[in-house]
Image (tube, rainbow, N blue to C red):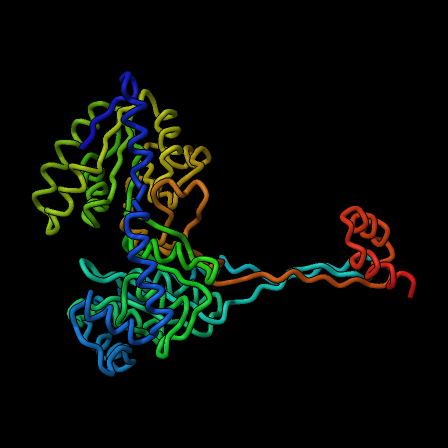
Length: 428
């Protein structure tokens, strides 16, 4: 774990390393990913079957698809507490995303012309849900529900199944979301299949969902042939804390990201050296109690940092530079700081708002920009599953009003047919 003080002469150099925390060497896997995608484009299902045998270690026969019966049985086998938790999460996430829905609109001008926007859902969305080291039913809810709210008619899920094993909670979440189409395929293969189609998996219009470097690279390569939500890297948390913050809360919140993945980043910025030192000690104590201690310890040792700032204003400036995925404001009056936070995927205000509440149950989406990309990306929303069409209608009076200006601009660009297409309507 790095322990930095903003007053040190080498601080800028060390801080710049944190700014580059999210850089993943996409070039190192690009050739492999390109080969996988091209193979899927060329050989379809045969390539998918080869890759499943190669990566997930089982042979596909007639069982590539996950059936509704499997989803239903998994749901029925859940205990009541888990069922209630999943339904509560679904309801809260649904209500939150409903409020994001944009509306079509048309404004009529006095001369009878009209301008507007028509909002439509994409026809088909592909959701990538990770598997392997961990399986995340919450990611299914967070990706499926915005698509459902948007009105997408066809939603397909792809998830890896190492040794043909499927997480029962993930299956139950699919049942709750009424997923009718899901496949046991992961990695770049799944992205290629959804982007270009195969005999079994029909091409989609947009792909969303998190994944490892192979998935991120594949999404980058297929972008343009389909839309994507974002290119996300390892998970991360940033915390701004003052001298009154609860050390135990701070430690466990930082560890909540570290246990995700060895590449996850946990960064605390505080104006209190006392808090900084106590959190460092608390983390070492808490690490020993975690089920995923090995993963969390590697993350903390190699990717975590505690920064002592001169004041809270500087802490905010540093966090805006870092533009973290999750940002907690563990200060006395967090809402007073909110206007000054410019860049963060999700912002958690106050000591009773751990990042984990956003991962599962609060309502906002947990698919968030990482590695500083919160400076230009937003959380996953219904918007990614929607598209806009401009609406334009000119009356006779309306085109007459605009004709001379339009023809002048067309003439200046040397586009004679453009100009004449207006002129003949004015002359008619």
